[in-house]
Length: 582
Image 1: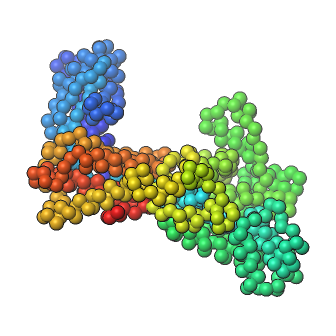
Image 2: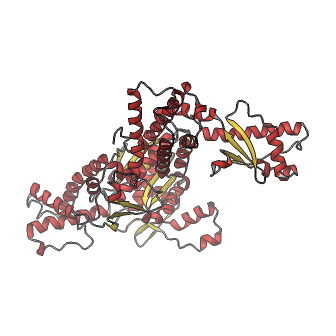
């Protein structure tokens, strides 16, 4: 797939090189120098479509005034057969290039040739990458934070796949450890309250207080009656935990499926413990000299691992010594392994056993202190966690209605659940809004705005542009006009500022995808689609299609259809529908 923006930049560089060689051969410029500069897209189209700084960057090497260098280069530049129509000198020595009709036609031809895959790149070169996201504790309903992490992870995986990565989507089920014990204890209290009365069974202060716990305990009672009342406590806890997980995990899958998310695998933490893989991983760390015993527990020497990591990353010894570093328990005195030990084992499984080149985890920002520790532990195992584990930290969601924060769910009395949200707004709106900002930026989710059907609602604004084009194509088809092939149109008849701006935006999708994958920032796609829709609406208001002479009508019809294709392409990456009617 051709990146026509990069192609244009490369052609400016090549034209400059040839012009310099020609000018040097004539003695107009000193020979033997290497011109180095950059090619940028000016913010103001009045300054051309591409601007180069080669003349200014070469002033020192050539010992000449930059403007004189620019004049010499421009005078020896042959644009024949190129995508540029002119080159102008501006300011102290900028060279501003203007695109010709060929480039604008090439953009539409590229979109036609690539179809739904327009914009794809090869940045990934087939690397195996896992994106692990949501991974919520299966102790209750999916909540708003999970909703944001879900669309961020899902869209990021889609973007990486489009950029040539071999991607895998995974949900890590925390079905072992302290959270599950607390879950079971909470269910036990509610179960025994049914049998013995609430006043006779205290509820643990740090237990789960939601209505869902009461409902699960009631279901367990209806199934088993009082048969577990006098059972050994561990037997009762195990039965209650199993009952709760057997119901909660399918609900999580159902909620996420409704949200448009399907995983390649749901990986269970319990499998790591049952197979002995956690113990094996901890033993490996011990063999490598990274553990020690204290107070009956086994500790990871996280302090030394982090020091080694930070020094390798360029921090000075003085800077490292000032850090407040602490070690971590891997195995408690009671013989139980910590969550951190299981997490190290899980990531070892990703990188070593399953052979992923890189694993990308989407976590809440409150886990920021865990990132370097886990990377360092993987470094200690020889797995280069500092480079192969990437963590995208996600800020909170603020849910608003009538301009005020919404903190409670009417149904459960707890934080807003994903299924509650999807009862209020469409999946399209939820996915678009949650991915509208970079992960590092908090999101204000305005419930009132999300259901509005006007241009203030960003997802409606983009979808309406797509539907508007579909309607246009249908109406013109009724009059006998079909969308032409790119080779059949006269690109030179598209010459208004609105047409130029729209095609330039269409050409940017490959760049946006490359940057989104590079920066792990899928929100770039939202911003791009909003801009593309805006450029189309402006074009449609300024450039008549129906009733124009045939060459203009067909060229503009092809342009509109290209926009339709790219909008559908981008919305598909976001997991948002592209309606034909609204």
